[in-house]
Amino acid sequence: MSTQDSVSTVYKCMLRGAADYLVKPIRRNELRNLWQHVWRKQSSNFGINDPQDESVAQRQLEATSENNAASNRSNGQMACIQRNTEQIEKGSDEQSSCTKPDVEAESVRVENMQEFSQPKWGKSFPSDIILQNKYEFLNFGQKFLTHGSEAEGSEVDTCKDDNTTPLGKDIRPESQNRDAVMTNEDFDNNYVLVNSSSEAIDLIGSFHNYPNCSSEGISKFDSLPQLDLSLRRSHFSGFCNSYTEERRTLGTSNASAFTRYTNRALQPPQTKIANACNNQKEYGTNSEQMLSNTFTTCSSDNPGITQRSIISLAAGHSKESEVATSCSQQRVFPVPIPVKGIRVNNLYTGFGSVLPPMFCTQSGSSPTPSPNSVPQQEPSFQMNILYQSSLENNNFEQQYDPDGQNTNDAANQNVYKQEHKLDPLEDRGHVSSATDQSASSSICNGGVSHHNSIGYGSACGSNSNVDHVAFVGAAPESKNEEGFYPQNGSSHRSIQREAALAKFRLKRKERCYEKKVRYESRKKLAEQRPRVKGQFVRQVHMDPSPPEIDGNSYYG
DNA sequence: ACCTAAACTGAGACCACATTATGAT
DNA sequence: CGATCATAATGTGGTCTCAGTTTAG
Image 1 (cartoon, rainbow, N blue to C red):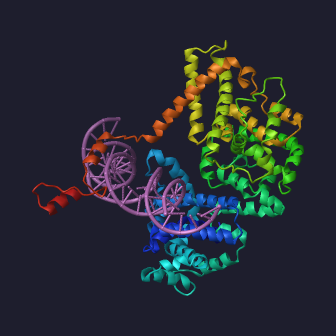
Image 2 (image 1 turned 30 degrees about the horizontal axis):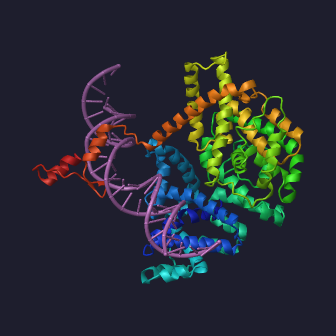
Image 3 (image 1 turned 180 degrees about the horizontal axis):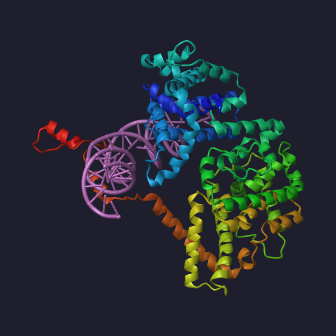
């Protein structure tokens, strides 16, 4: 990690906290709003005016918020530095079981920050950060000065002549160099400055890839989809490194701001990963072959879009495929479940009218899960469940119910299986086909995700053969007779599964929101314990013994 | 439509200390 | 091998703080 990356990470990670700490007279809200103001100004200065680019900034903020959260967990501002290191050393194992995943994820983040947290930060960093922050305030917002009364004035003054005033006492030449770097950086690197390290690299890659596109391509196929993809989920290229180097040229990030979470979530047993990788490879090659022709028409509006980029989207970003399908109000799901032997042309011709905007025009709806998209994703999820359930059901029927009749036991076990299979899925957040692939080998071997991906990828395609081959070839083994193509007979089971799903969701909600007390005795003691402003305080012993004796007895 | 400021929200930190876990003897 | 002791670690709840989000002007 370079110094610049460190600075960029730290810059946004600690900006608010440090600023709040050092510029205390300025109220937090004011500072926050100032930050927003500065950010907007900065964005506009770099020509990031369109809302999509604002969404980029917003995502960067989001990405940074995680780092902020990391720093925030330790008690505020300056102390957080020390505590971060402490937590690094301790392993930060003090959280409750409910928050452990976050802690784990955070520990990774902290590890990432450890590199620069140790040597220099201790003293100089916050000053540096606030210094840079104020430097920008001075550049962009005169308003900051208006806030400076005498008390804050010192702060402001220090940042005015930051090159001479040892505000941080140990501001090092490097910070000045960083300022120089800041001022000299171009559009890309200015984003780097405000991005966390790994994400910054991704963003660099993203922005640097844009020149490969024409300006039109930039305007149309701008950052939004790619960055959104990168920020949302690490895809197969993330955990299947062998997945064609060429995809990396897309600039789609493998390590997104949420990669830490998703990677963690996408760490199923190796075999499953291997399956996913294999399938992905397999399908990737197929899809590339298949789609190489079909997307030429689609991307005609976007000269900058390479076919591979779309292929990547289609193959890897199956989460977005959900969004795509859902955004395209075309009830993909229950619906065009292709009946065996019937070509699926209609399915994709139906897509064709709708999905192209997703690829060809970027001015459409954002792939980000908007409130509008939320309800639309639900059907997608249902489809996944449906497919998955069908697959499961087939397996299950083969094992327990060869006659295809649902006994209660069978239903119960089916419910059990569903819950246990869905648990990891839903606990990762919204069920996506990506998670489907990682979660269930049977799923990842075919059905859902491939369906989604292919549907997504071939949305623009007019080649019916491609569609057919794609659909059939992608899910050969999962295309079990009635399981894959639910008929009337399976509707009943579908209802049962939906009920099971509802039950599961109910359980999950309860599980998430109720606090588990492991030791009631401790709870009672804690309730009886005296507090001051919520904090435990020493119990005042009312016994007549002298305090020193009491203290001695206390400390042994 | 855009910007700013304030309100709202969710999560984490803090505290003392009884209880529990672990290691040494 | 079990018992005892010492030490470290854990967990408990109410309140506060903070950063992010939403809302109002």
